[in-house]
Length: 137
Image 1: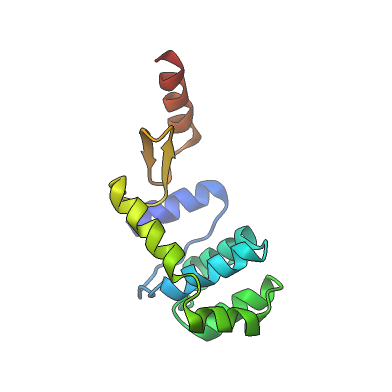
Image 2: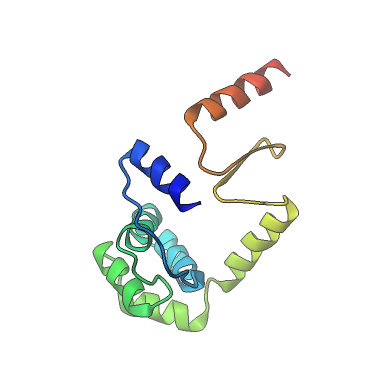
């Protein structure tokens, strides 16, 4: 699995290091939702991936989450309150339920027209082929 990730990353200019520990990503996901509400989700999300997959830091650790938040210009006090209140837990639960409903088997998963799925990090050709198939139907 890691070899595939590293090879795909090289194609895109992304460096992945060998993960030796899996982090509990729940806090990072809740913090991502805070970042979304602050208009900084994409930047935060990108930083979480970099910190986790390249720098091998624990994204289940509040100090790591705060480091990411500060680098994105987020207020860590406000974010801390949101995390303590579990303000975004419901949003994540809804997402998990949607994933269960559509029988999500991997990430990323791209759902097109509520019917077609592309699972995993796929080359652009997979998307083009699917769009051509949809166009013909």
